[in-house]
Image 1 (tube, rainbow, N blue to C red):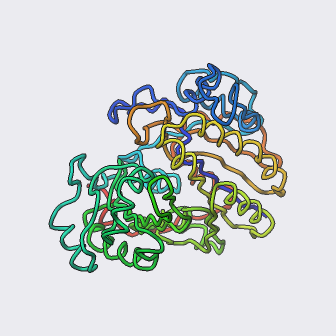
Image 2: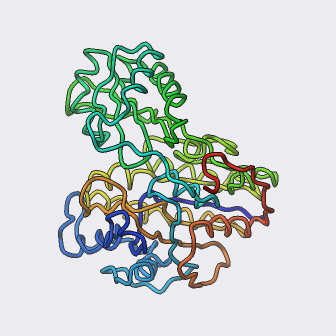
Length: 405
């Protein structure tokens, strides 16, 4: 009757990555610095006082922070009641796609293509090809930018001119923002498909459609119709292994996009993380033995980490924690719940980028006894899933992009 629920709290890192210096992130620690800010009264917007995540702490969150970084987070000192540890990434990057693929058992052994911090950021010949093939009158931005800030800056001009907003970040992405009504959602998705054909050969991991609505700066808001056009992962992910064994992979949130819908049985999306949490609860009642429910909770990263909003991040952790007993209470005999993350995004850090960190690994379920897992690999998460579901390896085709150099 085994089932697995794998929940990725996007960007909820716990410091201590031994190669953080390479990424200029030495000392970054998302969870520790949030807890310290809360304890010091520096995270009082929409919440107050110490960070209150007793359910995550009971599973080993505080212990994982200390294990990963050698630091003790204020107020997180519970004796773990489940299996707990911290995972360390080997992929050459600190982005969503690398983190999730490695959690699924396939490290990215060669670097993605990243765009330079210049204006313009994108090669002129490829942008000219995009404009010509899609029939758009031109583009706006062409730089590194925050997704919410760039639509405020260029949204009105976009409506007036019909030129979509094209920007990037520290991830290997090209993002295109356009008004869902004035420009049209279907037209935006077609534009992103064209961009994928042009930029994927450069090893750009994702082309992301970012539709928004509103009529003026300050009023522009992104909608839930985001869509990622991602390079497909090589064979052998845990999703492949589940499907080959006859199980189903129920993707919640942006998991389907991250894996280019390869070995994804169905997708559940929602307007926010709590809607996604409701989907995970629903799968507790519907998932069959042998199934994997694979969820990503994006708002820790997208709304609070990149915006360097400590109060918002702390509030989001507390809201998730308050609902966690609902999920644990619905687990059946034979179920396994794994809570982890894909990278860090320390809201106290400089800039707006992800931070290279270890991530917590919290494991529970009926009959699961306390156990210290130590420092493990991201790929060990896939190993836990495979062992619990008694999965066999899948023969891997040699990847032309991510295989050995």
